[in-house]
Image 1 (spheres, each protein chain N blue to C red):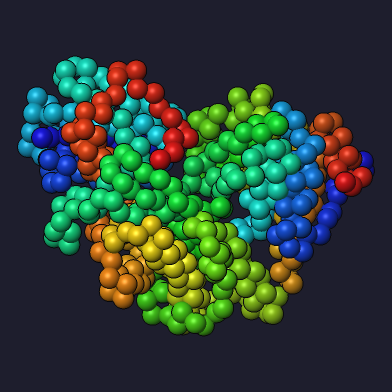
Image 2 (image 1 turned 45 degrees about the horizontal axis):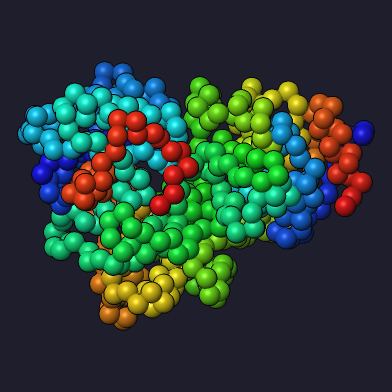
Amino acid sequence: MAGPLTIAAPTAGAMQALGERLGRLLAAGDVLALLGPLGAGKTTFVQGVARGTGVPPGRHVASPTFALVNEHPGRVPLVHADLYRIADPRELEELGLRDAFDRAAVAIEWLDRFPDAAPPERLEIEIAITPDGGRHLVLRPIGARATALCAVFEKGP
Amino acid sequence: MLVLGIETSCDETAAAVVEDGRRVRSDVVASQILAHAPYGGVVPEVASRQHVATIVPVIRRALTDAAIGFGDLDAVAVTCGPGLVGALLVGVETAKALAFALGKPLVGVNHLAGHLAAASLEDPTLPTPPPFPHLALLVSGGHTAIIRVDEPGKTRLLGATRDDAAGEAFDKVAKLLGLGYPGGVAIDKLAATGNPRAVALPRALAGRDDLDFSFSGLKTAVATWLAKDRAAGSARLPEGAALADLCASFQTAVVDVLVRKSRRALAREGLGALVVCGGVAANRGLRAALAEAARADGFALFIPPPKRCTDKASMIAAAGSELFVRGKYAGLDLAVDPGLEL
């Protein structure tokens, strides 16, 4: 795969459908970095991912901003983290992400606040708000696994 | 009966002494003490090393303020979840050591149950404690939930947020509007002078029969509104009356849904008393709207004063007292549970 992959997601439903499709492909050790401004739809996308990883339908996949890390059971455990409230990089140690990378699929919002904390292999998903109120996603794979993941995702459902 | 409460589940290190489950004898948070430290003020942070550094001075200060000694305590209550594991451990291990050394019972308290108990603490605005059973609306930065409370420790979750907590929506919208983070209080202030009908904003799930909430779409609606405003050529964020109008419209959208779902739950459960707790319970717009609903529907409303809506150890001591009198002690093997639910 040559460069980043760009996809339009006009509605929250479309965003969740994309997330679900990606979620179905995830395995333990996969890391998604969700980037984009407040209200872009990072948590909405992860709600879709959670459907794809097999989180039980009745379970709320709520924003992790306050709790910093939420974990959801499924086909593969999904660890959903949010660095928005983290003030000091030393606090990252307490989130248990390093352990999560070994045993779960991990989705991290606002990872761009702490670039040094980013694992060497990850799929970056940048969400932008378009002037008409829609969204548009740019997927940037970093590393071999993320590149392969992205290639399968690009082929469609 | 004197119970020491210890709370380290999140940003604040706190300790308090509560008498007979009702009277707050002391209520200390670390930032109060350390604000005068020689190295300047302390910004609350989630790191457990901060809790380690402050927990002992905070407990000492709680006892001094209450004018009692360690030997006067009847029990030690501590938050054991939900929260960050490292932060929780500092409080729980300290409480265990104290309980063991004093030979007094240890009581493990769910942080959320602590919020529910805040309205039981004596205050001029709350001459009597809430009766059981009652309905509780818990609205904070991390939670938005409607709970049936049959008795202390016996609760049933009726509805919760599917995405953002109400307080999170306030803080993030404040950030979008250039009011800083967290800025929920700034929105409340500006909303008081604005027109709540100026900007049409969605009220998610309001018409639905369930008691769940969703505030993410509302935050997004504000983000989208601002994006369109910029696309239309506006170079700056709204200011003055336009900002106040947007704040009032946003706050009213949140409050409307909270009030509507609370009324629906009271009617469905056949309950006559509503307890409101958590940081957003300090919001003036919410307090006013609930007071009006209580007058119209004839239910009794119990909202702690704003100073007792945020994370404090007095609420942990209050909830701990309720468990203590029921003999619900924890062993010295009490474990922390970061994902503890009600």
